[in-house]
Length: 272
Ligand code: FES
Picture 1 (tube, protein in one colour):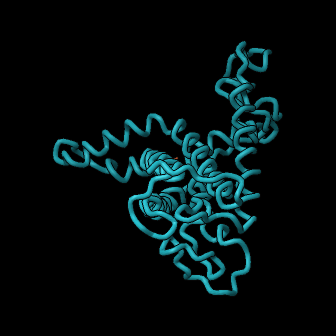
Picture 2 (cartoon, rainbow, N blue to C red):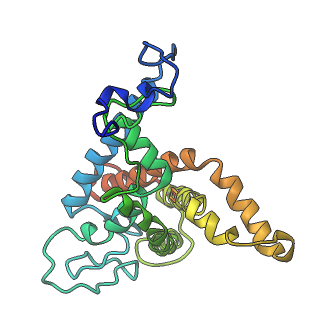
Picture 3 (cartoon, protein in one colour):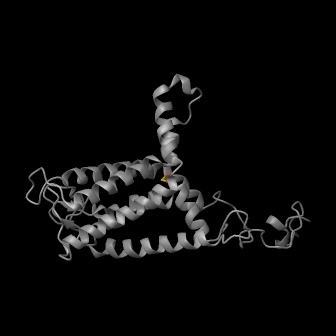
């Protein structure tokens, strides 16, 4: 069985069918910078969001609610004055209410085409960069368990749209003052607004969204509305990586802002 006897070294870029080049790769630039910076950025977010998600406090400073805790589904949520506190989960839930809802944005981002590239490169070096062979002897892509589960991304997209809808509601409610009267605008209102704009831009730039909007059509000219929408989504889609990072930063900043106001470290400046 000659194929079974093939040495691991004969695989991949060292396969007999490839040019025999001794160097591991031919890149002369600092190709490791991007995966290293990506891994550092993702780790920083994971550390911050883990602390905040488990904290279970300082997520509401009337009229602002942290995007990590919205919608707040547990009976142990603080009273949000008509905000996104739909307490569907009974008092048996004792942990932080963020843990109930964060599964959805987490699943959406974890299975996102861009984040997959980011963490495959940043953490698994599979491959670390373009034209740099990966160190692993075997490569099966996403064809097997567990990575084949990445296909659930399209379903997480629908949940992400629902969550973005709730965060939009929160941003609208941020135009009320702490007593519930409309016509307020504080710095926090702008923070929540900027965040929801970036969340929507990221969500709508999703590759699954692009397929839902314009995929499976034989003739664009017979579907002018979908074609036009597909053009918009495609323009956003070209910036998907940028929007992934911008919305990751904005969601952390929005949470941090609410934390600082709620914990009394900072007073929300009122703009009018
Ligand atoms: Fe990134 Fe869908 S591909 S969110």
